[in-house]
Length: 535
Image (cartoon, rainbow, N blue to C red):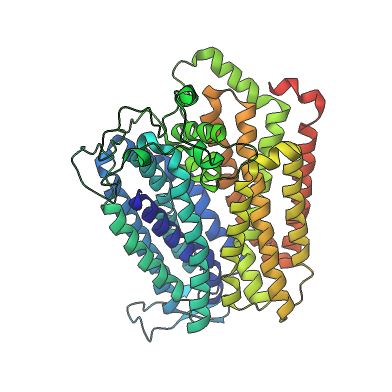
C-alpha cells in the first residue's frame, strides 16, 4: 500500500545520508580545511534550511500540481552543487605552501588560477548554501506530499516514514564500505548522485491532487481493496482482537483515519483529500499525532504508530517558527500565548531544547572527523554508526509513551542528558589505533539514538502538555526551529572553533559541561513553584 510514499522516503533519505555526514571528512582531507572552517561551512545548512523549508512548502501548498516538479528541480540543483564540491576536491591538492593551497590541474585544466584558502572556503560555502536551500528542504516537501497522498488515511504516516529511517542507516553503512573498499572519498558523491536520480524519478511520479475513482495507479494507492482491507483498524492491530464493533464507532468519529464506517470510500480505490494551503503541514501533523496517541495503548507496542506520534523534525522545519494557529484565536489567545512563552517552565524547557541541540551538533558534526583523523577508525567501521544509532533511536521512539508514563518528563530529559554526558566523556578516554577503540566507538553511537530519541519524543509531548490545542502547531514550530535550526548551527560553529584551537578532547568535554548546564536549567524550571505559572 502506498508504494510511492515509501519510495519517496527511501530515496530522499538516501541522498541526504550519502553526502552530508561524510562531507566533514572531504572538507578536511580533500580541501584541506581547518576545523573552524569546517564548522563555518557546516553551520550554513541549518540556518538556511530553517528559512528555505517554509518557502518551498508554502509554494507547493499554493501550487499543488507543481509539487513533484519542485521536488525534482530542487534536488537536481542541490546535486549540481554537491558535484561542484567534488570538482573542487579534484582540482585542489591538499599540499599547502605558506597557507596557500596549490591547485593540481592535471585533471581540470580549466582552473588555471591558484585558490587561496579563504577563497576556497567561500566558494565551498556558496555551494553548501545551494545544497541547504534546494536539497535539504526536500524531506519537508516529501512529508507534505505524503500527508496529502494519504489524505484521510494519514494514520498510516508512520509506516511510510519508517522506511526513511531504514534508508538512512543502510546508506551511511554503504558509503562507508565503498570508501574503505575504493580508498576514495568520491564514493560518497556517486552514491549521492545515484540517490538523487532515483529521487527525481519518484518525485516526477508524485501527484498530490485529487485522483478519480476510476484511475488505476498502484504506486499512489491500491488498485483494489476488499472490505476487510479497507476496514483496517490500527487499534485492532495493536490489541490483536476481532474487527471493531459498531458500538466503538464513536471512538473514531473525530478522526480522519481509515475506518469501516467511512462511507466516503468506494470499492476499488481511495479518494485522496485535496490539500488546503491554509493548513500547514505542521497542523496536519499535530492532528496525526493526536490520533496516534489515542490509538497507542499503554501496554502495547506499534512502531508505525509510535513514529506518527513523535512529530517529525521536518514537520517543524517545514512550518517554520510562525506556524498558523486557529483562526478563531483572536487577541486574547495571542495574549495567553505570550504569557505562556514568558513562564519560567516554558522558557527553561525551550532553553534546554536549544542547548541540547548545540550539544548534539557539536558531537555529530565532528564525530566522523574525530574517529577518522584522531582515532584512525576505518571508514568501513564508521559506516556502521548509521544503522546502530538508527536502531536505538527507533526503539526509543517506539517505547516513548511507556517510558514517559514510567519515568515522567523530568526523568526522561535527565536520562537523555546523562547518556549524552557519558558518551562525550567516554570519547575522551579512547586510545587511537586499537580494535577495542573501534568497537567502543560503535557502542557509544548507540547512546546517540538513546539520547536524541528519548529527548525528542519527550520534548514533543511536553510542548503539547504546556500549550492548548490551538497553539500547539506554533509551539512545535518553535521547538523545531530552536533545536534543528539555531541549536545545530551554533553547535557547528562552536564545535569547529573548539576542535581547531583546543583539540577534540576539549570539544567533547565542553559538550559534556554544556549538557550538565542544560540539565541544571531544566531542573530549575521544573521546581514546584513554577507549576501554576506554566498553565
